[in-house]
Amino acid sequence: MDLFDQMRTFMRIVDTGRLGAAAKSRGMSIAAVSRQLAALEDDLGAVLVVRSTRRLAITDSGRRWYQYCATALNELEAARADVADDAEARGSVVVSAPVSFGFVLLAPAIEQVSREHRGLTVELRLQDHAINLLGDGVDVAVRVGMVLPDSSSVVAHRLITFRRAALASADYLRRHGTPKHPNDLAKHALLIHTQASASFTRWQFARGGEQVEIYPTSRLQSTSPVVLREWARAGAGITMIPEWFAGELKHVLTDWPTPEITAYAIHRAEARGAAKIRVVVAAIVNAIAAL
Image (cartoon, rainbow, N blue to C red; front, top):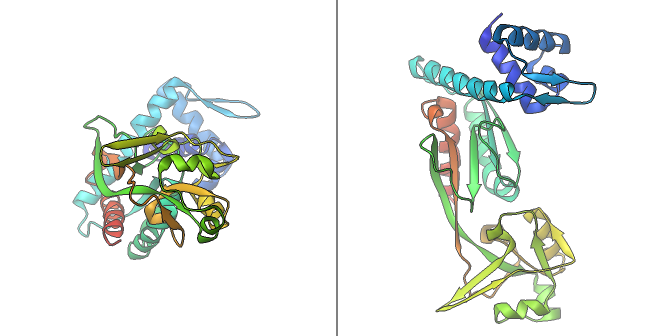
């Protein structure tokens, strides 16, 4: 039985959390997936997955084997791309990005690269929480306003530096007035981002030598900037979201800039030579540069 095929199947089991889902994604029967897993465990002499009627649990050995699989398969694809005459991008690439960033800025680029490279399959995962490249089975991750991994094992490509902006609809500002100082926000209905990093849950402003930091509270809260923008468009209050996501909303406190935020695309260093990683990262970088 092909070890590389077993490794791919095992990674899909971990990524999906279910034998049935892994079987569907691999175009196999559940019985065939079970046989591959059993053969792999027997060959390794280790239990990788604890199976029960309700869920799968990955053992410590299974987590370590997953990392070895990811490294080996990436290196295999990079080697194939390196010796191929046409160096065509082939295979699958999983891209993870924050919801609004991926929806607005990345989705068109991902669709374009899939049309230009017919041998490429790209999955765009929109998720606002930090992910682990190896543990979550992600090839390229966009990090926005987060500390980059301090490791030579990761390659980072700078995408864009931007600011968040305090925004509201013209109707809301007509009804409630426009704040002139960040402290005036206490008198307004605020729409706040929850379950985000600290740099997003607090509102920071600076003008000259004066700095103001606000920890907003609100009866309307969401984990998604997409929802916050829609609420602001409906006139529900003032929100703080990326300036490139403003649409027709009006900027308030324009003379009080917020801190700069930088976005990066990162991938594992061992995938640097893989054609599929190169073309996807290039598509992302070029799409952002064209804004």
